[in-house]
Length: 224
Image 1: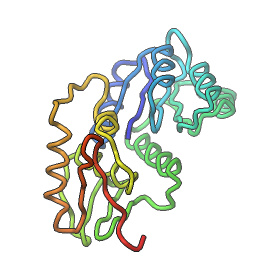
Image 2 (image 1 turned 90 degrees about the vertical axis):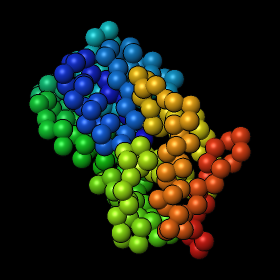
Image 3 (image 1 turned 180 degrees about the vertical axis):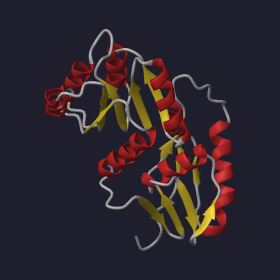
């Protein structure tokens, strides 16, 4: 899942970037309001972590313009502004959550997981596919309740394929799901992740099909 962080405090931005990247999210970082606005205009994100005190365009304006484009992407506002009026104004503009600085990274991660579950209309924090169980909150995978060891990016690829089961997922969609702006993706990197997933999931009856010239596909289990 792709997340945009809009934060001009370098130390905090880097800390949030590392935490969410290590949790198997693909993360982009905007340092100014106009950079965040541009990214949100031309790219698709599953969630935004938005500071209010951004240079060149403040977070309120970024949020206002985002909702004016009828985007429903979940937004967590993070700010040092503690006044209740600021909180009310942000929520009225369309923020989904509001977190006051300083905060624990673990709390931000929990709020990210909660909003993503809500956005995907999931009533539980897991995906099931035949013998496979994907624990979204814990970022773990089980086959017949036995743990399957996956890297962060292997997990991200599997999550995307299962969320879009029975639909072709293009290589470009996987690339955007896995890599942030600053990452350099190798030409065969996606093939390597899919190859490793196939080997690990084969014992549990999960087939990742290659749709030539398009991408990859995981069929829904029969009877679902």
